[in-house]
Length: 142
Image 1 (spheres, rainbow, N blue to C red):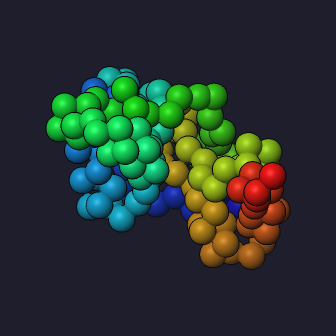
Image 2: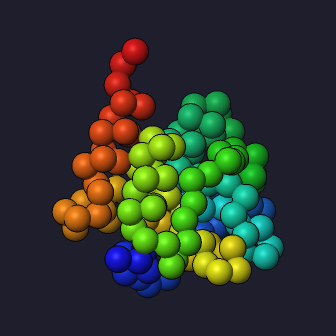
């Protein structure tokens, strides 16, 4: 089964030149905690998470109204997959990178969406267990 079967609707992303407050609003409005960050050509340049907002903005007393996304985003390398990739490839890449989300790119390398562990968990045959084990190893106390 292709990744495209798991990715539907609008591909939410934010521009690297947007202000952090816009990223926070987008996360709230779309009920997500992770946004791909794109350049003017809609190509992936980073990601920003709700955790990035807390640690890199709020905890440091920075202004969400004045701080640009590019100043606090997480930069690559990233685990990515294509819309036409088999979902098992996406699951393998997530497991190898020990991440619970992977950015999905279209044929032109533009952001097409995000595939999450919960998307995989919705279908038992998608490899969610393998990814969950890998992510758990990343988050386990050492």
